[in-house]
Image 1 (cartoon, rainbow, N blue to C red):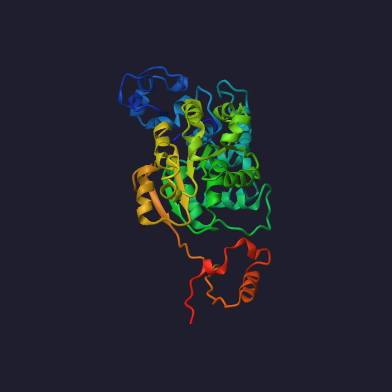
Image 2: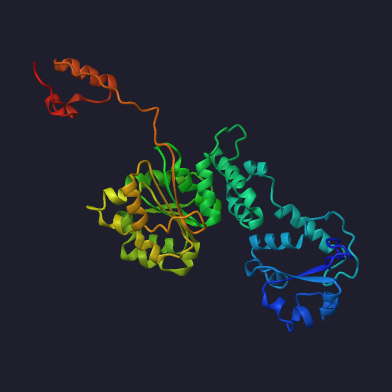
Length: 419
């Protein structure tokens, strides 16, 4: 069939792919010595033709499912990989002239369908990502998950983030660019299934990583937030993205919305924001143990993770976040971020918050630090004059909206030796 379609020349060995190494190693399997539904009838009993170099046998990992792709339905991403492996779009598919011997398909139908599939499924150029719909990103991003696409993965993430920064609709005039660390971290998490502890100054763009993971993968993000007010703001920010459906879980809305946990279990929400107390309560843990839900979860993100050490004395659940790792699948990624983190606090977080062992390999944790300097913030020292009226005038210079009555008396704020 491949020869007839012009994808393999007659002088080249015809590759027959199998998804089980045993089908290559054992001489008694159908792919070598007998009939096989995976091979055209002309190549049954193919040992002789194998020896003569007419065909060749190649091993393909089970995850690629190439042999099953000939007889069983595949998902879109798997089908894309299948046709790429077959080289279906390697040549010119514009002609409809197919020999009449093509089996199980009308004349010209194979070539026509191939041309249609090429238009629908062929990977766009990287610059075309800037004009694509955000909803289509998960399929595109995961099509570059294979080892043959490693050199393109960083560029794919960079262009996708640039498109996300444009807003819900493509904006050619937008000049916003993602930072290199944002690209690097998302690539690690998406393609390497690796955990990351990220320390960067306020305003660096840590939230873009939290929000974009689900947009790029289609997987659910569980985000742990220390305060409901912070969760409210981030829920509104996430809801701006097309296809995003975030929810905030708190003690109040759990009582007022009885079906909230049920909808979470059904996978209705893309981002689940909640406090450590809610994440570790029995009702939510019961929901997390649903294997169908776990297959949909991709990321657990700990925002303001320095609070794991600073607040654990009066909010004990901060110290028990590692328990979530025991509940969830091993391939679910952990991400923690903070604007400031000491080395001692870093060690405690890595040990107690669910992160995997430190290393640069897939499924390990890497600590990434950037400069936390804020050149736009400075400390100005100005002596407080003796007269209270002069002091109040200085306060009003800082912010006209601040009322002096809201402060403690000056003598309580400073200690000054009287001369």
